[in-house]
Length: 227
Length: 183
Image 1 (cartoon, rainbow over the protein chains, first blue to last red):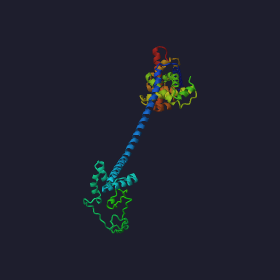
Image 2: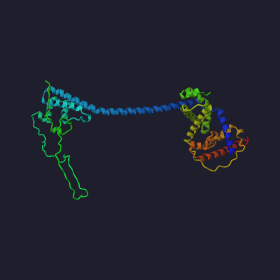
Image 3: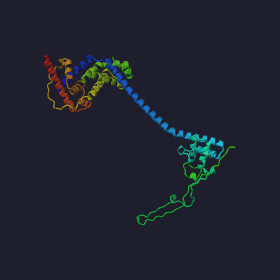
């Protein structure tokens, strides 16, 4: 074992002395310049990664902005069209113009509501369609005759019949109670008590544009004309 | 000479200070790389990569004296060479035969030419040469060699014994053939 250690020690001393004294021939400048190239390469990689992350972030944000701005643009365009129709129709002082003005006013109310509820009524949509196609305002009279029959007496329109009854629908009863006796499934007793349900009263102020009852129980709108 | 100022400038990334550090250690470290790698081109690559690692890590190095700096750079170079070797050599694929008793009496290494010894050392298989260099020259323990080369300690011992035996045979043969002397 001692001989092995002596062998290793001699070998070590010889090699270390050789490493310190021997001058090898190699391209020093190139070897040193490659240390700089390696460093630059590393920074180039880092810069590339940072730039790609930045691009992805900007693209993601811009896509979200485009998606959010589209419904607002449509809404603003519709409002502009309706207001334009209203202003033109006011000059005509006709029945059709009154209806249009009423639609414009209801649109202003709808704008005050949250964005999710800003759906236009059917009547409003009917009115806005000819304006988009740039037809004369006078042509709206024909459309309004069918859409709002109370404004014109030219043609008779059969309105859908509304059943007015005091009987409470079974499905609308809120206080239905069903009881079962425990352990006697064969002779199950069922007691059903029917109370007159609270019929939902129509409130014009709380009316939503997608509420179907608004077509049945709409109160006549009183217009105010400027003197 | 290396001063604390050069080390400080190297930490700041100043190229002139790096050049001075490189010039001081390039020859010695190239010899070390050449002992582990198969060609001078590979050794040059390892030298560049090793100094790149030195320049990057010198901010974490606590400079005490020249000796500690030399040992630190040497360690980095050896590790860089081992990493390069591991890509091409599987050190675990070496037979674990029992080690034979060899007489090392009067080996006469000190009376031999250094170039002959290094030539014989370079002529050894890569696994033998690496383990012998790490153990006998760099002073690694068998555990450190096993960790560095990802082999077992038994494999490290076996390769070391085989390397010694083979090196002695080569030295005997070369000197007997040359007619100078036999060890």
